[in-house]
Amino acid sequence: RSCIGRTLREVMPGLADTLEPICRQVMQTGASIFDLEIHGATRAHAGEERIWRTSYFPFIDRTRKVRGVNVVMYDITERKRVEQVLARSAVQLKGLAEATMAVHVATSLSDILQIVTDKARDIIGAHMAVIEMRGNQQEAQAIQAVSLSDKYTGYRDVEEQPDGSGHGALAVPLVGSDGQQLGLLQLSDKYRGEFTIEDEMIVVQLAQMASV
Image 1 (tube, one colour):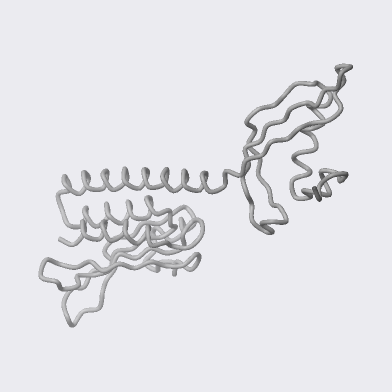
Image 2 (cartoon, helix red, strand yellow):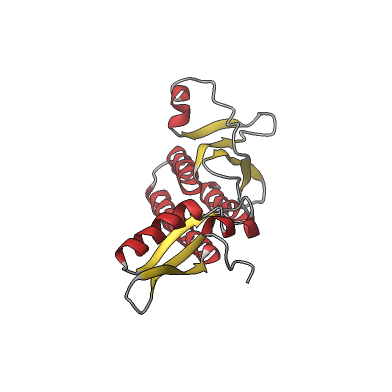
């Protein structure tokens, strides 16, 4: 009831720029529009982009003139987020399967470490991945495999590696069959957002492949 008599821009200022042209089109053509997906923020979720599936129907009077537009909106934000998570999980599982097959046919430890490092960076979506292995109790860990995105192209052929500063870091130990730590698989500077628990679970499985 609080919306009666108010303009669309007054009621939904964050979506007005998107909704108004669509409503004008329906007013001018008299044709309905179905299942149009729009994005934007509202006062109820200030600062948060939401996703709606919308449909628009002309309000026609007895003289067959279009007098207004009826808008039906369904908030599908959470459903879209679930779909994105499921899609990403499917991609990650495919990447794990590919890594398993590649490791199975690898002919050397260095090949296995490089495969795992490349796959870790690719599956998780990070600019940098490194495997450091421990020689013995007296030796410090040494880098055995490195995978870098185009962001760090300039470091590919030099001994000094980038520090990987950016969107956080994730490190998982490589543990041998005797329970001793063999080294670390580390990722840093994630493409988008921070590393998650789901990312860590994937990296743990990859680290197990390299723990040979």
